[in-house]
Image (cartoon, rainbow, N blue to C red):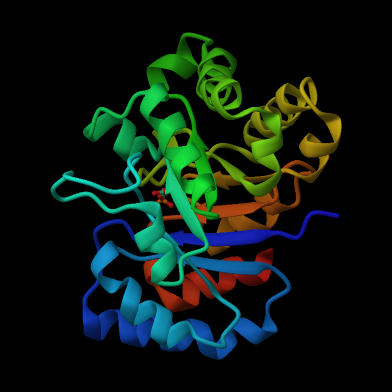
Length: 248
Ligand code: PEP
């Protein structure tokens, strides 16, 4: 039985005062949730979140990391640094990193490996653009993104990792994949991993992301291969994020 997980990706949003309020509200209700909860604030606020979430049961994650362990890499943040601030998870290969910061499959795989080396749980984000979906390339694109990681790290590394399927056309657009569309890709991801190791595939949690809201969460999370959500916009509003967690 895979326990559902709901993660909030705050992207480049927040301030000390707004975060304090949001984290306080999440922590106050975390005990009511059946799902695992995770928040991923921007780097400068990790220390604040670590402090405010202590004892709440809500996990802390980061949105990105360097593929390098240490050194002269101005502006970068290593996996060990994230672990120092209480992170257990880190997003890898979010579509905004891939498209706006030119992160290739090879780089994403290196970041995935760097996270694992430091004992962090990578959340590998995969997903196709609208043009790719319309060209019938969804399966091919998602497989390519997954295989880049599987071939570098081996399937065993997926035991301590999560995958997030996020169709790019559904991120921040208000356009959600239908539960059936999402389920189809989730099942394909699980079956690809099962081709390497059925046991790992059976335990792998695959999150859906892309305009998840309180109104559509229940139906999405009701699909057999959807094990929770990666939430952007709705993660910034306490009552919406909590409602999504309740739906899980
Ligand atoms: C995301 O950024 O990962 C995301 C899914 O955003 P939104 O929920 O706003 O579509």
